[in-house]
Structures are given as structure tokens and as C-alpha cells.
Length: 225
Image (tube, rainbow, N blue to C red; front, side, top):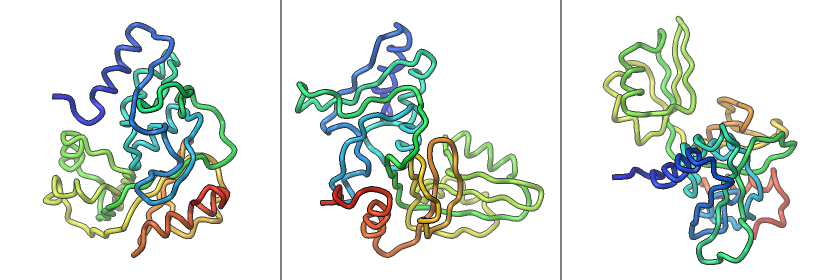
């Protein structure tokens, strides 16, 4: 049985095997949006995403693409087109390919349900082994002789909670802002940054409203309908 995204990943692996000129994935949406439509904001499709940017976005609640799908395409630089099966005659709303430098924000990913774990002492080998066995990918994993900090999805916490002896705090969501932007506009805790995006944790009673405000601060207000 194929897991979520398994068929897309298999198609990408086959594209790599035959050194395809491109890979087309047919979906029932117009590509990848700047923000998942589930949050009630009508935003435009993203015309171009780099492989790393697409994977980062997929890790943070974008359902169109599984994070592992792009991996087989990177070595050969095979472009990936996301097309709408209900509107096949239009150009691909989103194309994914080699990473390029971006001087502005291009998308927001959001995944609800965050557990922040802090504990005295370094990350122990038993907990690390359990995370690897269960294929849990922490959004943040910092460890030194004085202490460790993990940021993980709340719904995965029960898999290894018996090995936690420190403090667990809960937050509403983790957000990844893809691209470059002014960090001064962020009012929430920044937990990590990489070449593809900036990850922040947010605690709010109204997540859709908070996302709308963040979107408006990053993009033109005319995109919000």
C-alpha cells in the first residue's frame, strides 16, 4: 500500500530513472497557493518554487505536495509541473525546479498543533532512536550537554512521550514563511531559519485571523478577498 504522497514519489523516482525532461502531476487544484485555502483566504498560485522551498512548504501543511516528492528530481534538475486535471488546457499554475535566490516572501505554510519539549541534559540515544524509527521529523532539535529542545507535531507526541522527562508546552501552530522578508514584522517566536524559510511558533485563539494579518503584512492587501 502506498502511503500519503507515495504515488507522486514513485512518479518522481521513475522520472529520475529515465532522466525525463519534466514530470507532470495532475491535481484537482490550480497549483500551489501562497497560503493553503483551508484558512479562508483566496490567494494566487505560486508560479515558480525551488525544490527546497517546495519541500519546506510541504512540511508545513500544504496538501498538494508531499515533502519527499521532489527529492528524486534534484540531481538531474527535472522540473515538476503541478497541473489542474479539471482545466488541462491552461499552462501549469505552479512549476517546481532548481532553487533560485528570492528577494521577497513567496508563501506561508502553517501546521496546527505544536509541542515544545525542553529537558535538562542532552538528547538521549533512546529518544533519538525512537524518533528515527517512527520517522518523526522535528521542526527543531537542539541539544547540548546542558539541555535539549524539541519542537514536534502534537499528534506525534504520544509515540515517544514516555521517554520525555522534562517540560512540554503547547502552541497553536508552526508557520514557515518561504522566501526573504523583514523579520521585524514578526511578533511571534522565531525558532529557526534556513535558506528556504523562517519558522515561527504562534499561540492564538483565532488562527485564521492571525494568518490573515500575517499574510496582509507580507503581501499586497489586494490579494485578500
